[in-house]
Length: 208
Ligand code: ADP
Ligand code: TYD
Figure 1: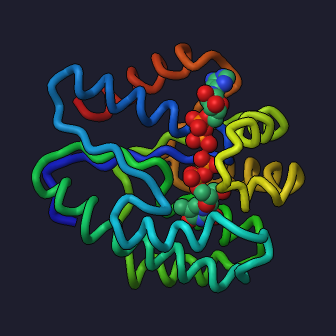
Figure 2: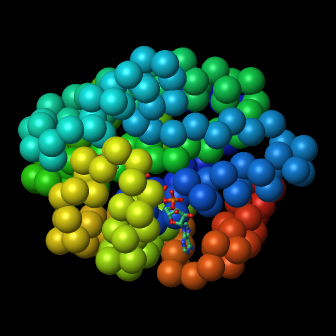
């Protein structure tokens, strides 16, 4: 990827506090004078936001795992082309609330043994990895309560229940071990401020 900017992603189960921490890091880097773009998946470009609505609303069994992989990958491709790559080329630090690691865990491990398919599609259609990834690791029961308390109308995945969220949490921990050079596993069972400080320090060290 021909980039001048750095690409940072936040990952974790639903309600883990990713969005809160992604916003906090964006504010912290901006206050130091860095150009920052805060974005999210699924979504982050007009076309990908349309695909998002198909994915997050409706019945939990609406799509098969295979169809989901195709929809998430289509949304990611549009997000990359229209939003992420132009910003990186312009030297902007891009912070994305979720990226390909979510597909590796949600579709590739937690719902069916489809990791091979996820990896092949990623290699052919996306081929980009973040420079730095924060995986927020929280107790699934607490995260589920936080997520459902938001009552956002986008609870298709939360509706799949605690056992599913627990499988996801294991998947994200395994992913941190698989990509140790870019992934930091962050203890999310703490105050927003304590987590924010740790992430800001790690980002500063990584960005130089
Ligand atoms: P995610 O993006 O991972 O789904 P959010 O950042 O939207 O999570 O947080 C989900 C809910 O939990 C929000 O209401 C948020 O204010 C709250 N929250 C986030 N981080 C913490 C924390 N460390 N402790 C307690 N509540 C938190
Ligand atoms: P998100 O808006 O980040 O939800 P939350 O704030 O609850 O964490 O993501 C929407 C849902 O889509 C979420 O349950 C995770 C799921 N998802 C996948 O299953 N695969 C993916 O590749 C991505 C990006 C998200």
